[in-house]
Image (cartoon, rainbow, N blue to C red; front, top):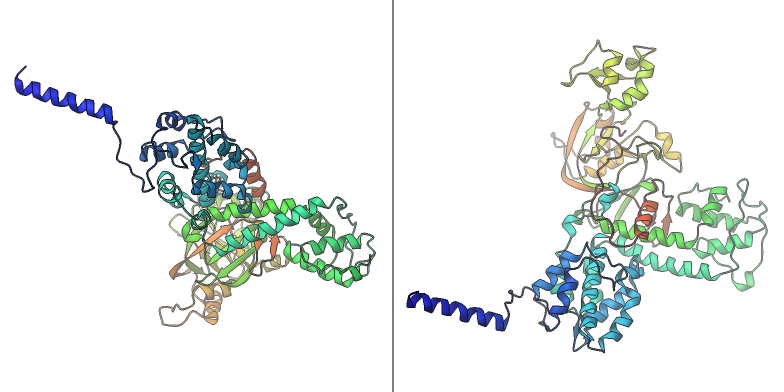
Length: 583
């Protein structure tokens, strides 16, 4: 070997020695204050593991990749203690974990009850205690921040068309840079949660109902109200009228009597009837002021169930993508109501709607999209499934049935087919469509926000259904009670090709005598959310509760009862209803 080679080999050996003595550190990526690496050997096996026995929920496979990156980026420095004592940030998060139920979350998901013992163990200065404290804190902070940001369960697990991916943080970076040295944990968490007044109102309502549930649970004398066999009106006898007053007063649907007014009526008084009307209006019941079987059943729902409904509502508000946190239009399916908001998200109107049937595969799906255009006097292309089930049986006994019911038959190019067969219709070889007009199943206007479910809003000739309290009658699409007013609201500040304003008169003209299948694009797309909450807080703070018509609350509660890790991957998508089968 020549001298040059020997010198080169010697230099490499010296460099290797220096590296071995000093340690080979990656570039530190975090902006948090440096901490000690004395516990790196204790941290590494914990960070590499997907199961940590010292946690309430040992399976951390969903967070392990983020935890690994978190510690690699800080060269395995500890993050949450200094001089064997919790940092102010750690103590702030521990306090937040203990009150996680105020956010509709489960404190034990973040090891709430285990932190006092862990803090005590730090005084031993034992390496294992410090390393376990650090990793437990990192996992719990990541889980807490993620749960507040995007919810615990991926909404696509339930085949909801809501995508939380764009809201996700880079948890390793966010926690290391934003959380480790934070001085005000509450302020940080407020930036993580949805910036939505409806979310904040729901959170405030949850606190009230937690207190009501506590009071109700502590009242050992309270018994369910006796069921009635028929509706009872003002003046009718009801032996438990005094108990009914107390129950109505619990949620302030009636003014609680003072001690001097403490009499025990045995009839439904006018004051009780007024309180019943208030209660019925808040619970999606027929508002008649009578004590009906349905009203008694609702009154006997415990406050703990109402707490769960509010918790489920908070979870779903967290699922909404950023562009839809404060949408201009929201359809709340179990309420059978559409709400419209101004650009500052102040309520401008509410409107009754008809939604998809509970029975069969006709439930209206939950999703968010941009409304882009309207179609006045639309055709309705009848899906093959509906044609086969609802039209073909009539056609088999009356070949001219379609023509008598305002239908026509076309081919795939839109050309009329006069000589069609029943078999062609049944097999989808031709398209049956309903001609425009006031009897068309879509009414005189439809509101389009393209989506994979083929769901849209539309008017309807079946206006009597809006008089029903429960309104799940469609094949999946959403029928609106005041289509002309909705169209004028959407088209305000727009003009047609002749320069005319799209006011209510212009809209009615387009619906009643305008050209068929006339598309009008919105100048600015309008965000719309087809939503599902069984607890909805009004602007005045009063809470309205509704039946879980599609069973989505029940499904969510069953998933949450299993504890973390919660489902983060979508189940195979099964759109309900089937594309096209939606009127």
